[in-house]
Every structure is written in structure tokens, then in C-alpha cells.
Amino acid sequence: MSLNVPMRSKGGSAPSTKAVILVGGPSRGTRFRPLSMELPKPLFPVAGHPIIEHCFRAIAKVPEIKEVFIVGYYDETVFQPFINTASTVFPQLQVKYLREYQALGTAGGLYHFRDVILKGRPDRFFVLNADVCCSFPLNEMLKLYEDKDAEAVMLGTRVSNESATNFGCIVSDAHTKRVLHYVEKPESHISNLINCGVYLFSTECIFPAIRSAIKRRFERPRLLSYPSSENLESSFFQGEDDEDKENAVIRLEQDVLSDIADSRQFFVLETKDFWRQIKTAGSAVPANALYLMKAFQSGSEELAAPSANIIPPVYIHPSAQVDPTAKLGPNVSIGPRVHIGAGVRIKEAIVLEDSEIKHDSCVMYAIVGWHSKIGAWARVEGTPTPITSHATSIVKNGVKVQSITILGKECGVGDEVRVQNCVCLPYKELKRDVTNEVIM
Image: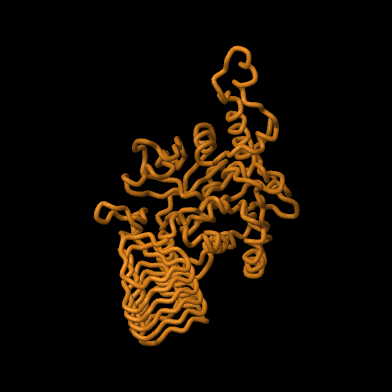
């Protein structure tokens, strides 16, 4: 019989906590093209900082977290510069990159590295999906976890009934906050409370739950070919060596959470704050707006001071050169060494490093790729979508197009050229007006 007493970590009375950030890998993130061709999505700058750094800022506010693991199957060298910077900016955190040799799924990756995560016997650990934009109320999750003596806590948010079925849906007890039922992307409406992709797990609950999901996967006979009587034995059951078990793609959302919901102390913290996923390249623009607004509300020193030509919130990198007659904002991020000419108008946009926007041009609802050049009197614009909408595409003349216009790396837009609702792959020159196109 095990007594339900939290293990005390050596040298201190508080239980120890770690954090894991899931970053995926290069074969994923294809929806983030053309931006992910240059840079993995987690390192893409939103509101002046890589997407993954927003996770780190939240983790740094939880005093008991000393160790953070980044789990993914990008090459180690891809994240090394970021890890070096993070170790300087957050000296209290020890950061390690754990590389999967292939896609193992969100739960498979955790299980594969269980020995590393369990080193030093932590009692619980946070799991954050790197492609989520929210305020990450980790301390509130920790408080709920302790108040309820929980085995797992997930962050949830309310969305419109129409869009709920695109996400993992949670049925919870409104009074106790206990998760009663969890279904990933249900076919019919069950709840408008959805999974935000941020979790806190007890180490004693999550690893056995993943282990039983792996076991279930391999106990189900897998039909490889229609068996004739003589090869029934060999073909009906898939060969089961231990290597297969290790290589299984096991996903938290589809394979593990509904089980924990059925049998365990599983609770949901409903956030009233902003939340959205960063899936497509265009979704970086609303995420940029949400993070900038949060920085503005918290009185961040990083943002440009409001004035007649700066409508807050606006982030301008110190090395960028902006003509005083250019009007920027709201929700604009300007990257390093960008040149912005006289009379330019920019709103709801991300302008990436080393780009140049010439005089009197207009950039709205758009992302301007690295080293791109926009000519004088040009217009690069997308279509505004409601802030509550989780979609980044719209239907124009019966055709589905991106609502945000995106220029890949080193694109050029000629003088007086209008680019509307287009996605432009890297190294393209646009010399004529284009609308609702993907420019390959």
C-alpha cells in the first residue's frame, strides 16, 4: 500500500517540478510554409521573440522549475543558438534538447525520454506545446493541482460551438473542475471547452498511462494481409519485437488523455485569457497581436512609446530604422535592421529582419519575409478576420485563400504593385498586381 504523501526532494521541502516543451520536427509544420522553409516554426519571431521564448518566459515565473527539456526531432544544431541565449536570459533554468530519432508522437517522445525526465525523481512536470499562443497560467495550474491533490491538470478555454469540433473537447464538472470525458476532434458537438495543449502531470500517473496505451496498440492484432490457412500464423499478427514498442507513434491527445479522464484525478483549469494555436503561417499575425496586447497591458518597456504615428501596441527592434512620418500600429512587429521609408502605413503585420519598405507604401494583415523589398506606393495586404475566429483562410469568389498575405524570404514587390491575399514563396519578384494566388 502506498501512502499518498508527496515525495520530498533532497535538500528542500517542496516537491520538485520540471517542464517539457514539445517542438515537433521538420516534416511537421508544413502548414507554416513558406516561413518554415527558413526557420523552424518554434523559432519564428512573434511580438519580437521566438514563439518558444514565450513558453520560457512563463516557465521562468514558476520558482520551483529548475530544468526544461525541449523535445523534438529537429537537428540539435537548429536549437543550439536559442538554448545558448535562453541559458543567459534565464540563468536559473537548465535547458536541454532531447532529439527523437523519428516522430514518436507527443506521448511517445515523453515515454522515450522518461529516464532523463525522471532523473532526480521529480513529482510532476509541465508539458507545453510550442505552437500555442496564450498567457500560460502555470502557477494557477500548479495551485489547482495541489488543491485537488490531482494526478493531471490541463488548461482549457471556451470557443464558439462551430469551431469546438476542430479541437480536443473536454466535458467537466463545473463545480469540482474534474474532467469527466475527453474526446479529440469529436464528430458531433459535445462541449465548447477545449484543450489548450498545456498540461501538468504527476510522474506516477502519466508514464503508466502511456505504457498502457502502447500495450493496447500492440495487443490489437494488426491485419497485414488476408491470411490463407497456411500463413495464418505469420501474417495475422504483426511481429512484436520490443523495438516496435519503442517506435510506436503514441499521441497524448488521441491515445492517452481520454483514459486518464475515465479513471483518474484529472482536472481542467479554464483560462479566461487569450488563446490560439499557431498552425498556419498566417496565424502568426493574430498571435503577434495577442502577445503585443499582453505586453502593452503589463506595461512592457520593450514596446515603442505611443505617439501620433505609433498606435500601440507596436514593437520596433532597436536596430530598425523607421522614418518619423511613417505610421505604425496597432499590432505591428518590426524586426532587426529593417528600413521603413517616409509616409509608409503598417498595421496588423510582422516585418522580418533586413527588409526594406519604401516610401508611401502600405502593409496590412501581412507578413513580410526576411530581406524582402517593397517598392514605393505598393500595397501588400490581407483581409481582416474577427479576433475570435480560429481560421486563417477565407473564401473569395468560391475559392479558399489565405486571409493573411505572406511574402517568403527575399521577395520583391515592384513600385505601385498591389498584392492581396497571396502567399508568395521565397525569391520571387512581383512586378504586376496579384490577388488570391499562391505564387510559386
